[in-house]
Amino acid sequence: MKVNNLFTDDEAVSPVIGVILMVAITVILAAVIGAFVLGIGGSQETAPQASFQWNSDGTAILHNGGDKIDGTQLSTNDDCGGAATHSTSTSITAGDEVVTNTDTCSEVTIVWKSPSSDDTNVIGELSK
Image (cartoon, rainbow, N blue to C red; front, side, top):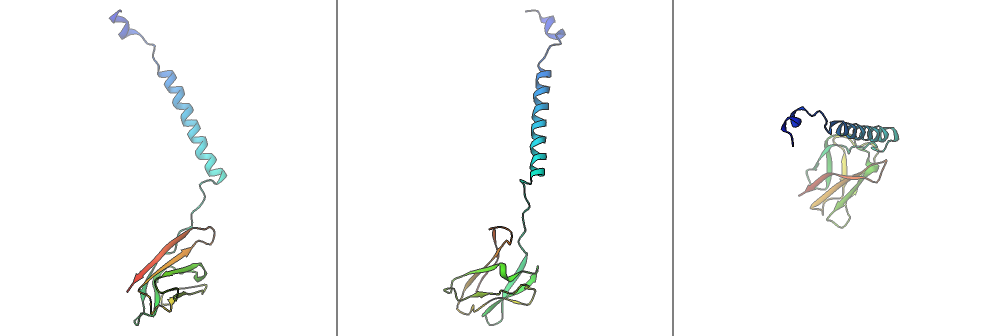
């Protein structure tokens, strides 16, 4: 083995590594562009942001502030045997009653369902 050859030898694997990296970058770029063109990523609808509170006598839950909510997209889970009913109004804004008949409930969960998919989100949880 000649030590001088180690320092003067210009042959290396860098061209092979360069080709592999260029192919990998091309494949990744094609996959990203294809996902955008075909719409694979899709768009996610965000749940409305709102705050809720019990009314003064504890018989209803009020929309305390935040986004306007379509009542037809709401459902409730409660611990009062299903006595609570949610509003079916097409426009629930701050100050409106969202859930009624809650006088026997100690916990109520307000669930929003996306109109364009089967996704659901809990947008409010209240307990007395």
